[in-house]
Length: 404
Image (cartoon, rainbow, N blue to C red; front, side, top):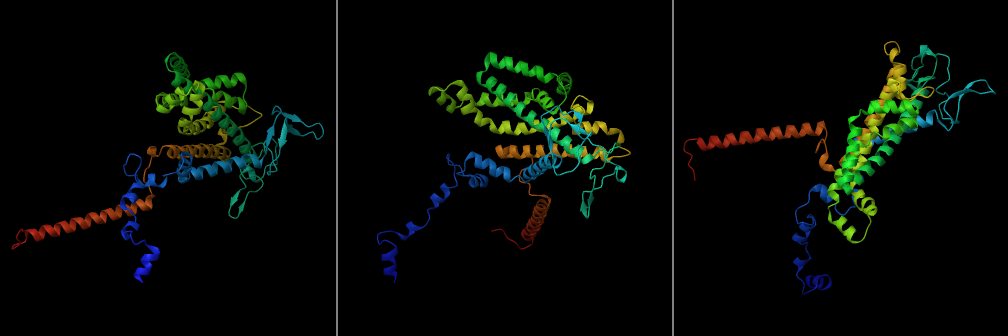
């Protein structure tokens, strides 16, 4: 039987030990190009592209994923509930056929049957009609103001306008900051000095004051406010991109591109810029988070979005006097402001950890329950070690014990 097995499956001249896995080959799979042993995290992402590694790390960040889902739900709720207005001036006018007050522009209606400018009969003293159990929205889930306007519709419209400011600011500030930082870091010299001195001038002027002046000058709608904040909030991103370009322009792949005859524009946008995507994406989310707070501040001070349109900051400014008597008028806009800002911040944290895991704020944290179990196990091990050590010392000091 053994001869038959050897003749059919294993060549007679081969050594059976050669068929076993080689220990050196097994260890070589867990070493990088320099021969050093890879960590567990490096083994998990070995062979994956940079994009796949970033996506995997981001989706492992539970806080960022939950925040992204919540932010998406807020956007869907804001635009699907009360609809929106496209075109027109946004001002109120009287419909000649019905004699009612309507808004100038093409109105896309939503599933919520009420709008944000009509006065309704006050129900339940204007208090919120929403109930958690059994769950029902009621006629006015967020309540009504003293004129009978539906607060749910007003908060949703304010959220729409604040989101418009956030997206326009994030896009514009990212483009301006990236271009200025890239040109400054790549060319250096006089170009770098001029652009950085211009950046310093923008930095030393308080952005809130300058944005208030520009917003009052050019008008107060969501698009204008977003553009004003966007052309002022790019300075921090420009400095970060400049620092990345100063380091990357001396790398070997840039020299190879120059030898190959690539133009400066191609080197900047084709070779260097893709290596700074992590810094740009992370700081863009931080700019968007700061944009909604700046918009709220401008609207609260009266320099932001003007009547007849509304924003979350304008709602807080309008109903700040009702904080003690009808606090729900003040709470709901504040809740949505905090929710949007926190969601964008957590998404930014997840992107930062995905692009550069060395910057994790809380490394190797598995939750309070796991950390408590780890602490208790370590405490028990210390006690056991101390007891064993004391017993060994007693045995060694006992009479009649000889050292060998």
